[in-house]
Amino acid sequence: MSREDDRINDRTSPLYRFTYEEVLKAVKRRGCVLQYVKDQTPELCLEAVKQNGHALQFVKEQTPEICLAAVERNVHAIYCVKYEYLDVVKLF
Image 1 (tube, helix red, strand yellow):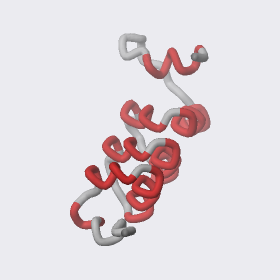
Image 2: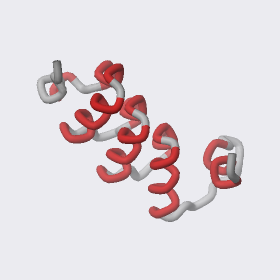
Image 3: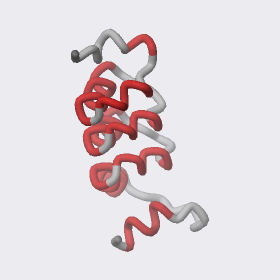
Image 4: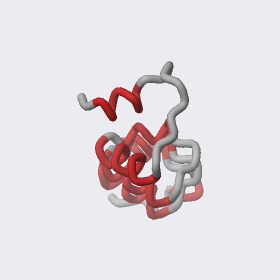
C-alpha cells in the first residue's frame, strides 16, 4: 500500500486538501474511496463505479450512465440503484 493510500484511508488524520487530479487518481485505483469525497463530480463517480461497482452506494447524485456502468462492472450493484433508474439497467 502506498503512502497516498494511507492518507486516504486514515480517517483520524488531520484534514488534508487533495487536488482534483489526486482524488481522480485515487478513485481510479480504489472506487470506494468515493465515500470520503465531499464534492463529487459525475466524472469522479463514473470512474469510481468503473473500478468497483459497489462504489455506487457512495454516489450522492446517481445518473443513468453511472448506474449502468456500476451494474456492468458488478451485477450486485443493482441493489444500490435508485428506483427511478432501474429500467435503464435492466440488462438481462
